[in-house]
Amino acid sequence: MSDNIVSMRDVVKTYRRGKQTVEVLHHLSLDIAQGEFVALMGPSGSGKTTLLNLIGGLDRPTSGEVTVAGSRLDRMGSGALARWRADHVGFVFQFYNLMPMLNAERNVELPLLLTHLGKARRRQNVAAALQLVGIADRAKHKPAELSGGQAQRVAIARAIVADPALLVCDEPTGDLDRKAAGEVLTLLQQLNREHGKTVVLVTHDPRAAEYAQRQLHLDKGQLVEQAAAAA
Amino acid sequence: MFNQLRAVTAMSLGTLGQRLGASSVIVIGIAGVVAVLVSVLALGVGFRHTLANTGSPDRVIVLRGGSDAELSSNLTRADVDNISDAPGLKHGADGKPVLSPELVTVVNLPKKDTGTDANVTLRGVGLKLLEVRPGIRIVDGRMFRPAVREVIAGAGAARQFRNLTLGSKLHLRNADWTVVGRFTSGGDIHESELLADVDTVASAEQRNGYSSAVALLDSPGDFRKFKDWLTTNPQLKVDVQRETDYYAAQSKQLSKLIDIVGNGVAIIMAIGAMFGALNSMYSAVAARSLEIATLRAIGFSALPVLASVMIEALALSLLGGVLGAALAWLFFNGNSVSTLGAAFAQVVFRLDVSPRLIAAGIVWACTIGALGGLFPALRAVRRPVAEALRTA
Image (cartoon, rainbow over all chains, first blue to last red; front, top):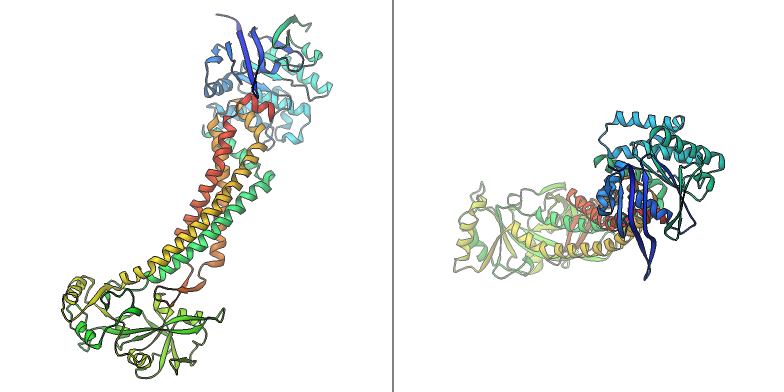
């Protein structure tokens, strides 16, 4: 059995823009090993987010095979993909995407509502996740009452609370100052090293990419370079 | 699934305060529709209620054959004598049949609110009035006396028309008539009328016959025997109906018209309100598009998201429906109005905002809300998650 958590073969992704069909990913193949921390870099429009969406099961390829955590995502319908995402992936977005009317712990609890866990167990797991990201003291605060760095920590707690194998992070530091960005990236590194999470990070920032074990560069829908990071 | 639905719905309803303007459009629009619908239909319910209260299954009305209504009917005194001999009629303590020969005519009285003249029924009734119609109660003054120009006024008529206070003089048919009493009769159509001695009315009208004969049967089951005897009697050419059937037929056309107008107005308003609800729900979904996309990315399925949008639309429309029905009840329930009945005379009745009507209004409201919420809900869940996250 392969140690790769992500395996993509000859993947093509096209979009329709008006009457035109635009090919965003061109026959791309990629493997990511279990427990790896990978940074996806490249200029705007290179297909980073499209690739990330395919890995995270948010989208399906036009052709080619996408296997993640042992499941063929290219063969799944949208309902099955939703269930698969709930079981296998945690998402971290650039603008945190927290629910503004819910406090931190209720936000973190959301993925657990898709499980069979009882209320007490959910509360326990939420507390543990908030503790792990170092934001337990802000559990009762709503997103508007948190700084950017704190809000992103809550978002990371939400991403890990259901214990997914894969963390998919789309520019998680794009909205943060350098200090907060460094703290968030260190946290992601810690989750990767100490808790075995596979992390796929999309970033424009070479400094952020340095936290990863491997950097992948995309240009015009193709992987042009793979480099091992210094970290 | 229930956890998902509860969480998404709580979020949806929790942000209502932030979308107060758009939410108010739905609530107020639907409240307007329901208020108008319920008020207009309350006219029909009140009218039907008044006429349905008139009559009893053991009371019969006999008209000349082929007459639709009392105003166009004419029975001779001989006809009434023959009718008195029919089997099945109830007899009083004096051994005579409980029967009232009646003469219906129309007089003009000014309305209290506008001062304009309106037709009011003046009904000449026989001496056995209170036996034939035991529901009649004198609530003020006294009963009219035979052979004297005296009338008693129904409570509805006294509310709606001028000059019907005790002691007032009415100038009818070139003579003065005195109002000597006010009566109730269980909210039926006779409360819209003036009652007087039938022979005095006949004399004033210079008529020698009657409009109808109203009689009480021994039991409702005697109707067939009574009717067959009269309709097979070669000396008579009459139509016989239970009083309940007669007044139901009288109310049919007008109440149908009120229903058509009421529902027609409501349908037109409902279409407008539905577009308002659609617009507001599209805005609501647009305002929450990032939240919806994020929830779906996390793994929430389409159904709870769809259900939450529908629940919000239904909750707002339910609120609008209850508000509209409450306004209709507050401002119109029990209001006394009059309209021209089938006999060309005013029928006074009260608007009846019944529980059934309120339920109908709320069903209308929820239908508008469901249709208004459905399309935005479908749009929210059909949008690809990746696209929704990118463009939210």
